[in-house]
Every structure is written in C-alpha cells, then in structure tokens.
Image (tube, rainbow over all chains, first blue to last red; front, side, top):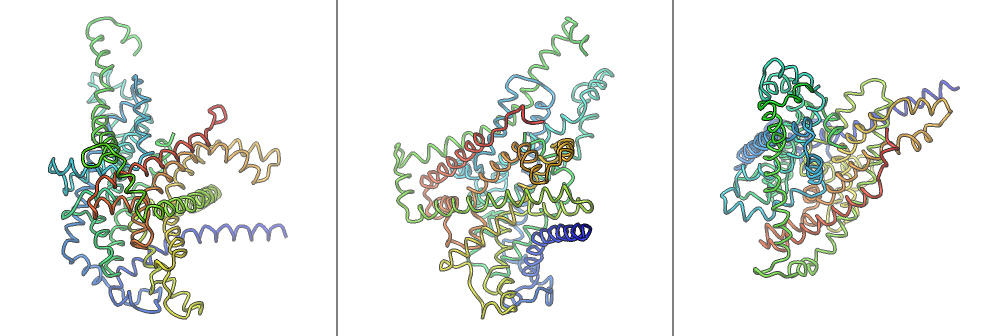
Length: 272
Length: 297
C-alpha cells in the first residue's frame, strides 16, 4: 500500500515537471508553426498542431520585405556594440571591486545595484534631444549606448564575482616572478575568468537584442528589429508578425543555452 | 607580501600610491558612463517633466492626469503587477523546489525552464498572439472539443477580461524564468544540514518549508521581487503585441506621447511617475523583507 502511494506520488511529480516543460516549449513550437506556415497557415481553420504545410518560403518572404534585413543587421550591430562597451567598462570596474578594498567601493556597488530600481530604458526619452544634437539619434551606436547603461551594471557585478573567485595568490606569485600587474592580469587572471566573461558578454548581447522601448524611441529609419516589428505591428499581416517573433526568439534561446552553466553563478553573485 | 610593503624605499612607496589610485582609475570609466547615460538623463527627465515652454510648471502633469487614458493606464498597470507578481513568485518557488527534488535530468529541465530568459517581451507577446488570435490554436482546440461554435475573439476591446488574462499568461510565460533563476541561486545557498537536522526532529515538509527554506530565502526573494516589480511597471511590448491600444499601460502612454504626439514633456511626466512607483515598490520590499544578518547562514 505504502509503495503504491509512493509510486503515485512519483508519477504526480514527474507529470508536474513534464507539464511545466510543455508550458514553456509548446508556445515556442506554435509560433514556429505560425512562422513557417505562411499566409495560408494563418487563416487555416481549425488549425492542426502538426506541421502539415510548413515551409521555409514563409520565413524567406518575411526576410525579403523591405527593411527587415537592415533592421536585423542594425540589431546585431547595436547588440555587438553593447557587448563590447559593457565588457570594456564593466571588467575593470569588476576587477577593482574584487581586488581592492578602496574607499567608496560600497557606494559604487550600491550605485550599480540602484540602477535596477530604475526603469532604465525609459531614460531614453530625454536622450532623443541630446542625441539629435550629437548626431547619435537614429544610429545603432546611439541605441547601443543606452543598452550599455542597462548591461553595464550586470557586467561589472558579474565580473567582480568572477575575479573574487580566482585566488589572489596566483597573481601575487606572478608579481614575485617579475610580471607587471597588467601582465599578471592578462596571463593569469584573464584566461581563468574568460568563460565567465564570455557568458557576461553574451548576456549583454541578449539584453540589447531584446530591448524594445529605448530602441523604438531612439530610431526612425535605422530601426533595430524589435523597433521595426513594434512600428509595423498594427499594419503587418499575422504571419509576418509570427515570423518576426520567431526570428527574435531563436538567437537568444541559443545564447541562453550557451551560458546555461553560468546563469546561477551570475545571479548568485550579482544578487547579494 | 607583508614584508614587501613594510619596506620604506621609494619604489614601494610609489607602488603603494599607485595601488591607492588604481581602483579609482579602474572604476572611473564605468562611473563616467553611468553619469552620462543614467544620472544625467534621470535629472533631465525630471527637469523636462516640470517645464512647459521653457518655464517651470506643472502643466505636463496636468495634461497627463487630464488625459482620458491616464486613469485606465494606471489601473491596468497596477492590476497587471498585482496579478502577475504573486503568481510568478509562487510558480517559480514551486519550480525551484521541484528542481531540488529532481533526481535525474535536472540540467535539461533547468535549461527548458529558463529558455524564456532570452525571449523579449515583444516576442513573448507575439507567441501568445499566435495561440490566442481568432484563428489561433486555442480556438482550434476549443472548436475541436466542441466547446465553441466558431472563431471567438479573446483580445478585443470588447473582451477586456480575456485580454487581461492573455497578457497575464504571456507575462507568466516569459518572466517567471528570471524569478526562478534568482530563487534557485538562493536555494543552493541554504546548507543541507538544516534540513537534515529538521528531519531528525521529525519535521514535516511543510514545517521545513515554512521554518527553514522561506526565512533563509528572504534575501533572494527580495531581489527577485524588486527586479521583477520594476520590470513589471515597465510592461509595454507584450501588451501592444497582444492587444494593441486596447489595453493602455503607463509605459505605452509615455511612448505614444513621445513618438506620436511629439510631446516630450508629458512623456517625461509619465516616465517620472513610473520611476516614482518603481522606487516606492523597491523601498517597500527593502523594508518589508529585511533579513537580519544574524538569521542568515
């Protein structure tokens, strides 16, 4: 009797896990069907959940629409720039936080954490005026600057955690053997921290790739993919919307897969 | 190392002085950047919201509160936050505890559950649009089961309740993952010995959850709640993808005033309002969920 109860409980637990997996995966499968089904697929009634007439044509015809390629390219440029900026600025800051007990370190850490209590993307609103004056308005560079403000605090806190996890003695040993601080950092610390830094960089890429509000406010003709999709949302046919949504999802899902090992290290440290 | 710094010759003094400056040099670029792209725009937004035609005034706020959509946007945004956040925390907590019990396949399950972490709010809205639109998969399924006679609209202005539920579903689907990740990171920090000790004294799973897991998870719960609530007050693209203008929210109104009405002042007033609400929520969480350090491992 007891064993049967335990068996039933096990089954219940397993089906709970399975249902939650389906809750995540099925909607992605369904928008993929919508993206590959094309015009005919959207109006088919009632729909089947099996990929009957799915083809790449639908996705291709979406990509051939005027401006879509360019928007995707702008998104990639903005995301790569965000990645570069936030690592270039965040890495040294993280190193300082991890290695030096300097005055003001706590205040700096607090400043980084405080940015989270603000809806940062909304701060793009007053920047339009400044950006027009500086020639940054409607450029992927301008979008990337705002996205860097979003990603930089994460990059700094994540790399602080990474560096704190590398024993200081490694570096000190290198100094003893005559390495300069920089050489010791480059030859000893950097290689050890590199996978984690790559994860932080990918995270910055995803933040930029997915951001809608600031990108929409700061661009008119050189829109990023999210800004483009938002702008044409009301007038574009459903199957194009699904194709756009699907194309937005694919790279970030792959990237999250790539950094899955670091997700908890990143959140565990950036969180306290 | 200690012997080296004790030496008083010039070289070591120089190195020590450089050591004092170095951390500041390292954080200077980040501080400069955040000043220019966080603090300055913050001040600008506030200033912009309080000026009309070059003079200080409350005109923007008067226009904002006098707008037809204002009350609706406030109500909708708060309703979403109040509906979504508790559901998300409960779901993420359940998922986190399930993960701890999972004997095999933990990594793959964890990856699947965190996929939405990479999905933008716009894409999430479009995903649920594919399911909930008139000829979508929900209607198809209901039709085949004989529950509805034909295509039924769920996302219209005439069906505000189902539109709201649709948005809640999309938000639950998309943004529970971030809460899950923060809570799982927190659960991993709870020493196993506590639970084992409770087992020896015959504690039930519920008592263990109430007396050990929940109190020790407080700091993680706090950061998850702060992060999620701030983002939830910014909700915008999900709503637009699903319901267009049928469901006004605060950030959407800021966007419309900026991009379509070209009125930066009223848009800034909305931005200040959203910021004030976010900061108030953060403050409440910091107060309400304060974990005394001596109660933490």
